[in-house]
Image 1 (cartoon, rainbow, N blue to C red):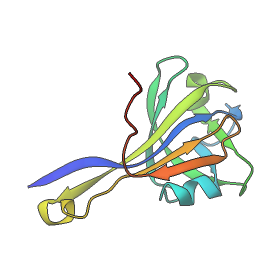
Image 2: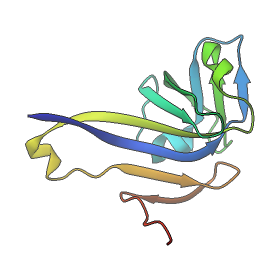
Image 3: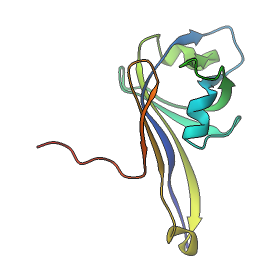
Image 4: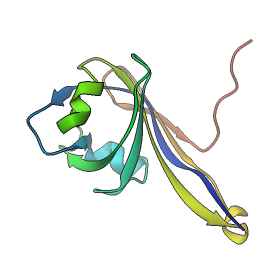
Length: 126
């Protein structure tokens, strides 16, 4: 059996640009791509916390340590500068691979600087 699970997540990044007249994609700071184990041209799911939009595109490399999150092309209609996004990738794992499975979860501050990297979602405060 194969199962599709979350591979990685950039949690609550802030959109820094929305470029309608650009080839479709999402430019992401190279430091964030590496931290989340997202490869250039890899499919990504974007969940816009600010407006509820959910869409699929692919990642391209943005300038290292810039904090860049630029939603491009048609997807620019679904996100505005300042919006808060969750960017996720998924992968398919077999039962053997699941024994070592750990997602890569990257948490950032309001400037898209890494605060923490982990493999468990923190418990919510009661």
